[in-house]
Amino acid sequence: MMKRILILGANSQIAKSLIPLFKKNFLLDLYSRKKINLKDKNINTYKLNEFPQNKNIIAVINCAGPGDPKIHRNKKNIFKIFDTIDNNILKYIQDNQKIKYINISTGIVLNIKKTNNMLTKTNFDYVNTKLYLERKHRLLKNLKIYDLRVFGFFSRYINLNAGFFLSQVLKSIKKNKTLLVDSVNNSRDYIGGYDLYKFIKKLINKNFSNGAFNLLSKKKTNKFDILKFYKKKYKLHFIIQNEKNSSKANNKSLVNLNIKKNIHFKPKYDSLKLIKEETKHIYNF
Image 1 (cartoon, rainbow, N blue to C red):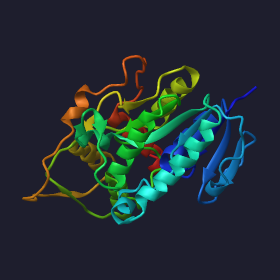
Image 2 (cartoon, one colour; image 1 turned 90 degrees about the vertical axis):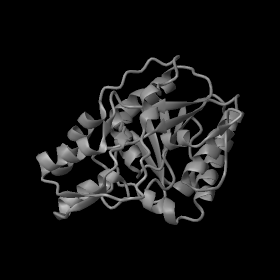
Image 3 (tube, helix red, strand yellow; image 1 turned 120 degrees about the vertical axis):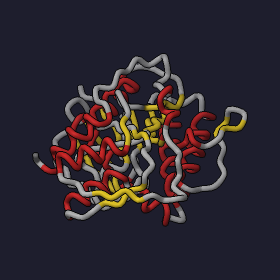
Image 4 (cartoon, helix red, strand yellow; image 1 turned 60 degrees about the vertical axis):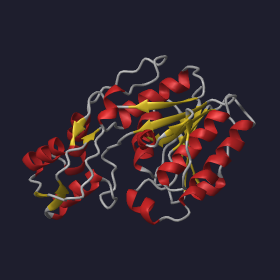
């Protein structure tokens, strides 16, 4: 008999990438604020405010909440949105502590300083909200909560109107417009649906203690390698602007970050290979 998984934020890029993979082996309850345009014998769809509908769940995957950087800058109640969703999930799993709660967090939290090994909450913007949620989760040691710190995610389901770097690149190609970039060659790490699915499935199938996990690709890339690929393959036009005040921050710290040692996980895709593969499905060549 197929087991049931619950996914919140079903219309997000990450959820859309996971659903086709999970529905092959699991029954799915999907929740979203907007209508979910999916019809499948293994899928039930609900509005987010209808959560929860079923008690026979083995895992909750939380992809809900605004993920677009554009929204992060303008959303004043971003803390309330994430915290309300999280509290509803925690209330749900408190009644059945066998349920595993997989929360999509962000790798950016590692750029915030830690005080006495505890994550610091300084204000309620996107990153600090994620920090706050992680800290709250670590205090609930009796619950099986896993925060997955994703440094970058890319798939064919990306919203070209979002504020992500790759959204801007793809939109520039589609509109045949020149992309303006600064001269800082940041390192970048992207995982996709397949590797994220494999890791979540491992968490579901085995018992691990409450914790946060840094989820990286097989190999990171950098901004200008990405731009060169799109220029050669898809005729991207871009201009480098030298900004005196450009941040020279990079992601060198990513080099030594790995999944917790008690989880054996080898990603299939490196960042650039993933970008190449998924972009084929966007432009069909």
